[in-house]
Amino acid sequence: MSSSSSTVVTPALVTQKAVQRLPRWALILLCAAYVLPGLFGRDPWKTHDIAAFGHMWSLAQGQASWWQPSVGGVLADTGGILPYWLGGGAIAALAPLGVDPAFAARLPFALLLVAILALVWYTTYELALTEAAQPLPLAFGGEAQPKDYARAVADGGLLALIASLGLLQLGHETTPELLQLTGSTLFLFSLAAVQRHPRLAMLACLVSLPVMALSGSPTVAMMLGLVGSIVCVRSAQDDMRVHLRWVLTALATAAILATVLREAGLSGWKWRLDYPDHPADTFKLITWFTWPTLPLAALTIWHWRRQVWRRHIAVPLLAATVGLIAGLAMGGNERALLACLAPLAVLAAFALPILQRSLGAALDWFSVFFFSVCAAFLWLGYVAMHLGVPANLSVKVAKTVPGYTPHFSLLTLALAAAGTLIWLVLVRWRTARQAHALWKSLVLPAGGVALCWLLFLTLWLPPLDQARSYRLLLSRLQQDLPGTGLVCSPDAPVGLLTALEYFAGHKVDGRALAVSDQGQRCASLLLRIPAHEAAPEVPGWSRIAQYNQRSRNSEQVVVYRRAP
Image (cartoon, rainbow, N blue to C red; front, side, top):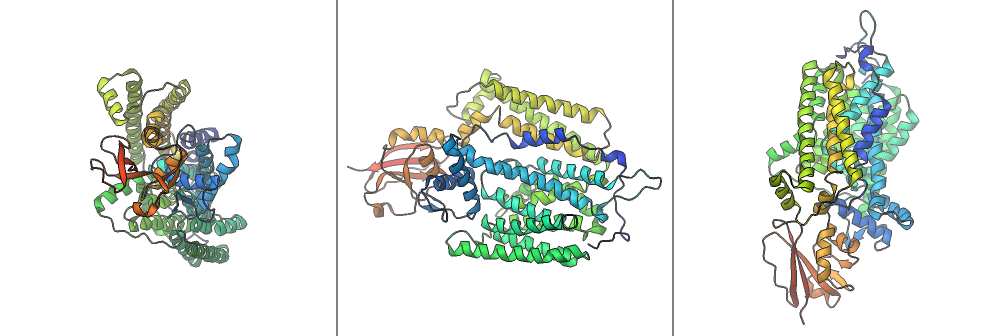
């Protein structure tokens, strides 16, 4: 990671023609199509989304201490406190203005997703400007100019992140993991921007690791701090050596904050080590979760292997390794794997200057086939829901979402049609002409992901919302629950407790107490039992109702009242 690259031969040969700029309006439109669907017109979804929202809602309602977020007496066991402060503060500020609390909680997290996309672009841009990352000069001139080259590679990094399948759902939830990803990406940016923006890099570093610690991920913050220290120590650049002090300061601050949280009874230092029960399933998870960035990142590492300790490779490589180790250490947990997506996208961007035409064409045609088939299926299902044709598909949709009644919306239909038309134009542009831009091979993967997400959250939003929301279940439970009085549901998930409070307005207690110890406080008792299992007999209580949460094969909720 020395400042000189004269002894190292870069594998990149890039002409000025290959670094043509991706139109900013097109990039902004793509980001909007990725970020905005799912922000409006839906309930908090099971299970993590509504659980996190429940803690935020309780804080905004004054039902829990801001230092100990809880729902129904059940403390938040993961996620620290900062994510709940963020969502709870947004609800408290916007709900009095008539803004839907669920939308208010999602709004700051949508801004976090925008920040992550921007940080990946600027991280890639700064790393691509380093001397070792620049392409070789051509014998007769015409090589890419440094800033034009860096901009084209950064566009590729942003497209790679949007194309990452693992970010699609998790990036649109109001969960602590999104704030953790923001912190890790901010730390990545701090290591990339040291040379050109030392003060900005210092500020980003000092904020990033403490944010992760306050969001429930102090161990990963410590690992990233160690990675940053290694990068700084190995570097021969004076700026990086100076930056080491800020990395160590951020590391110490994060450790102190995590310890304070633990003393306060919150997550703090909480180890969640778990060996994968099925390694093959874990491998499959990593494969689809990191598609297409992981294979492109592997290609980058191979072609740039002689520069592996140069900053533009070492920084994202080590950071991605931290995310992969964290995910594997937690038994193949996809939420832990989220931390590896941003650095993998940066690594994938550096595969573009050396990507062979045959591999790029294969990626293009796979994307055309896969996402076109996905879009066609979504349109076919939409037609089946509203017109009943084809009949067999209509029956399957009705079984998947029992009791759903289709509602036609001209606005959602227009948005879905516009997105599909843009996709067809994009496919036509990519397959009908010989494009030279570096980012060309990632346009279709990113556009396909954005299209399918847009169709899901327009054409399929009503049935998805009904299937993944507790609203329908609570409307059925209402007739069996008293209008007033405490509803006790020991060992119930936080999502169900939140639904009882948010959708039905009940006061709940979800603490794991024996029913006999709760005295006369409980007006009703709710127990959650596995599918097809008989409801247990509870002394002193009479069973009055039993419901499936979604379908016959889903978990059941049993309602009890005190025996006369």
